[in-house]
Length: 431
Image (tube, rainbow, N blue to C red):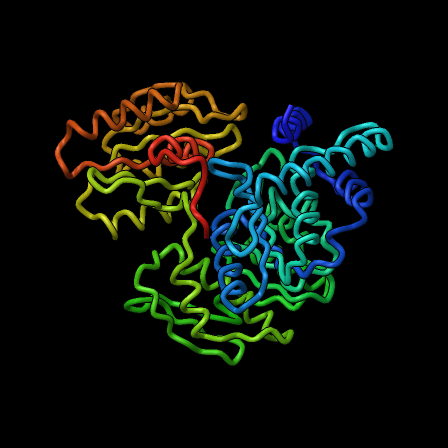
């Protein structure tokens, strides 16, 4: 049994919220996280892109920069990068072995094994310490307060991207409760920044920041940003600059602006902020699976949007970028996603919905999603096996006139599988 298979066997333990297991696991590994300088990022939408913007900036500023994100699209090694390059197979297997050995010790001590995500997080810390990285950009897995990444005691910066209703069975039924959970990454005396679309989420984050004595910068109050021709303008903290980023999608302006706020927080702690490097590093940042063009003729787009706020941003982008296109939407969701609201938002641009089920045990039953589309009056087909659904979508696309395009969305698990099939890749390109 190889290292990946052994790690995958930990998935039977599901998610366990709380820090006891990860703390015990890291103690067995001699606290690799304790010496790392970390930018910690939570949120519902855009946190992966925000991480990628900051990691790109730090890399191009000359720092050896680790990046830990989740989930992966095609290959588990995507989650672990240094300066954009994945962990090697050799290092992956070696650190997996170290962590799995420690997991067995923890199981004897606590009576239960660490989870799959806890093991991967420990691997990331172990590898980053061994490689002597200068910085780690760390994406929260789920929530914040009880997420395994929250063992970091004193991050240099904590960032919270826009929050929406998600994982309500775990994080809470209201936007305020979800925001409170995510604000759990804020640490006493540390710098932090956030951009929020909802007053309730901002108020909850501000309350936590005040209680902990956190220096919180809020978008729209402490810094401002706006779309300009060819890019965007950012103002705040005595810094004002227009950035020429012609290829930047509107939805990415929020993520880039939050990333720049994080860089400004680092500048306040002595890390240089060079606007030329910001412009260069942001312009070349690519985050696969986010409005990614995987084929040109006919057009096939892939986007990991999986909640209502992300769906709104996606529809806005498509209407502006491709106003004449008619969309076949291949979609599938995990069980905890609000696919009913998603179908309502996507309805105006969808000519045909092809519903399938993501290749993950948490995938929602296609029949339920099919019913939600039918309720909207959208022509809908149900093909449970994603490979057959993709083949059907491509077949229909070839037979229709050139104004039709294919959008694959609803789940990164579905997107990753389709991406690998369409591009013939085992994984992603470097970032």
